[in-house]
Image (cartoon, rainbow, N blue to C red; front, side, top):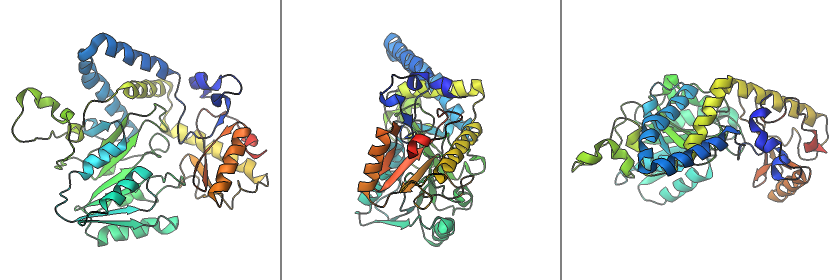
Length: 387
């Protein structure tokens, strides 16, 4: 049904990596064919226009990207969507807006992606920084435990993933918690494993949260194009700030560092915009073909059900219900399954066995992850996973 948009990968010569059943789509998503023309267009624009390329990029391409993201997430103000090559740059810029000469208390979970987890470990070495990490398990009580601590403590910043990167489990009721957060606390939602996978409506909390995600995973536009939505009336002044942040005032620089009341408040500096072109090409393709996030999610849910049906009919020593970190498929899961293989050695061995059967997967220590995408066949039963 959707495979026709990915012919460059799915018609690859037998034996090549792209001829395999690609179940690492949550790690690196295949790029739709339209991205090839997009990259070439970026080269032509950059080579032919030289410095004049900045006009079309900032006046046409970036607003078009922001508009597409805003429609996807039901955000009311596209001009409040900051962009950067990665989410870490955006989050660190936000962290830099806090005065570290005063106590900084941060609330998070023990299941955040390596980049933020590492940064917090480093910040935690400073005498004025205190980090509280709520255990993500048991997931059934996570929402209650996190929200209780959010209101109990005097936190300046809270940070949590909408879908946990290691397990694929959705943080229960995170958007509702965000809507009830204390005014004193800035809240960041890491939406990387939710964006363009699960339907997301931020309309009611757009002015309460910072939402980060990017193009590398489920949009399939590759690395290098990430974003962060900014609440209205944000007055934070990032210490980490680049020359893009004063684009509107380059010719009339003031003695004091000023910040625009839009995405430029969190802008950095020069970046490669090939991923911007690719992302726009995909947005335009999907909008033209009527491929909504809702349709993508329904397709993946059906694929996941076929996988589970096949798995249940096979007595596999590791890929089974007992080892599957699995919760409510309809409401509580992202677009990949995670199996606890007991040890890192068993996880690595299984990954190699799958590769020998032309199945690409990925792993995190003892956890093996298998992902699903719209470029999987409409009637794919995943039997080769269990041979």
